[in-house]
Image (cartoon, rainbow, N blue to C red; front, side):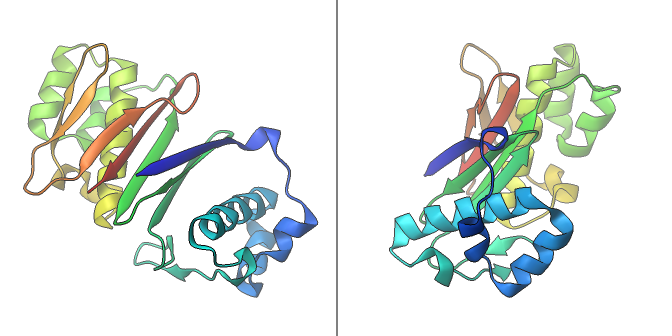
Length: 194
């Protein structure tokens, strides 16, 4: 498992970046903007580096939930604010990063992604913001690893184990490993991989 974090605010797409995009991707870029071009170019260059296949030859298929896929190299993408995370593994992988920010009704939001046992522990600890975002990232990484959507996050129960180095303990059969990380100050991140 490997992941890379980019500060997109420090990067600008170039004409060379756009030349790596397929016709369909250029059409998407027309409505999604220059950041889409930059993200796809970074992803294609990294996939090329890992596989030896030229960047301009990489063509993605689209998965059941609209995410890009490429069979020679499993990967996953997440971006939040100005940061992008690309994650790679030899098998299925899921990643999520989130900028931590105050949210109203954390316990209500947590109920959407946490199984009852985790939610109860979260509320007993006073709904800490760091824990909420670590759990949100873990839930999203787990569902992305499974090829599912966040609407089904509670189907992948886990416990958050607080401490100096908080950990996630999945509570379902044959779970992937989950690794928490901080991609930048005031950000949470998690990657799930088998």
